[in-house]
Length: 265
Image 1 (cartoon, helix red, strand yellow):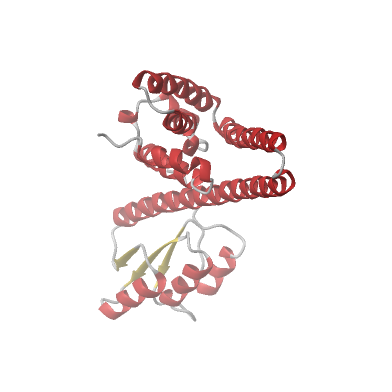
Image 2 (tube, rainbow, N blue to C red):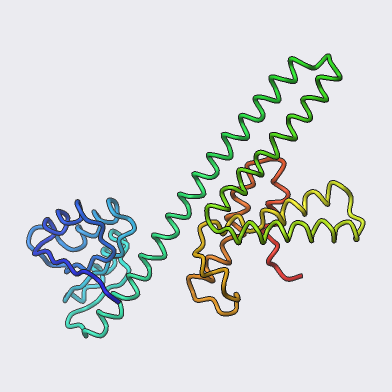
């Protein structure tokens, strides 16, 4: 593990560094000139919530520990004198915690952007349908044209989603298309209704949309060989897919299918 270590003689100097640098892990003494460690960690908790915070003190007072935990939300509390091995272990765990939190925040941001984009597209589709319905409500021929346009618009929505998936990994799109073809054929064999066939086929087509930001190496390995981070991505992708599709009425049911498709029955 290669890391860059920065030091500060007091809390003010530490905050100055953090104003210009992204700090993954902060290890602070409790007793320092000016501001205490508890006060420093409380400020950092508000201004840099992803930074993992560790408190070191020679004071065995339980109230100090409780204050540091409550005000600074510390990751670990270490009493002096410490063992170097202990500090190294805590630092390693803290950096892993930062990495997981940073990835989770990035995923949440990606979901928000996708939801906003899809929500805007859905609103535009609804606006167009409402406007055209008012204009063409008395004409059967025009209503037929409107239905055709709406179907095309929904096809454009699916095309946007597939394009988003292609930005992540081309193999994802190819796999999903092949899966959708097999599911549609299987649904016909089972004699499912046209509505149910359409729902499961759409779910199959989009069932990996939650993996658009996954590393390419994930698709080259069997899930039984995944590491901790890969397991988290794999197990989380069904929820991501559901959250992307849920705002769209016509895709809400396929999204529910995707949410549960990994569950054994």
